[in-house]
Length: 218
Image 1 (tube, helix red, strand yellow):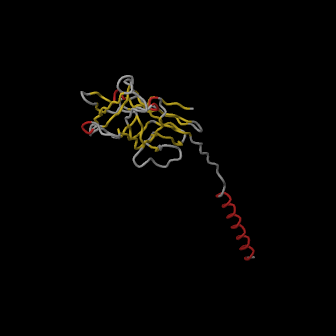
Image 2 (tube, rainbow, N blue to C red):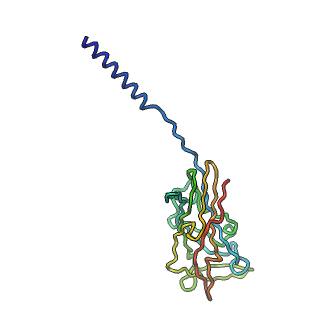
Image 3 (cartoon, helix red, strand yellow):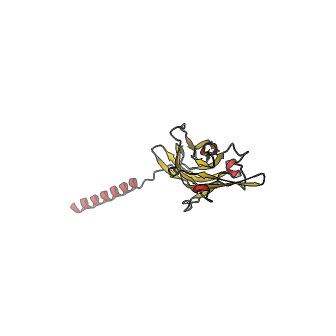
């Protein structure tokens, strides 16, 4: 009798164990939406292209981009590199000619990233003028050629000029950057050379003014 009870008890325990394992191993479906692609492009605004600051392959004003991030609500940040396969930026950053035809046409790409669908609210980046050649007084040299005549002028970058930029700035309207599944969002950042290069008697002073000029989804 006792042996039979023990046997039945062991069978019951085994059945309960199997049932418990079956429940605990039940498969649950988790839905993870496909990412979208976020692309950041760069352009310059330059109303003086027809006078002393022309665009073209013979003009050079170099911007060094050292970092780029997109912000979500809650101040979460997603780094953006030069292309979708990159895992970091070059050690010395990436260089862009602000007076190239591509800068005029908004076709310079700062970076691309696969991003979770959602709404993003800002851009953080670090960029400074690069002294590919020195100007007068230690400033940044700018070379231009207009009507076949070479020219050169110097841009003074004050020591306190911040490389780090946060968009939108406090005096700019807020914006939202939508990222949707399997779609591409292109954000264009503009450097306003009219406002950023302030003319003095013999040179210019650099006071960077960046803003987001367009957000498009395809």
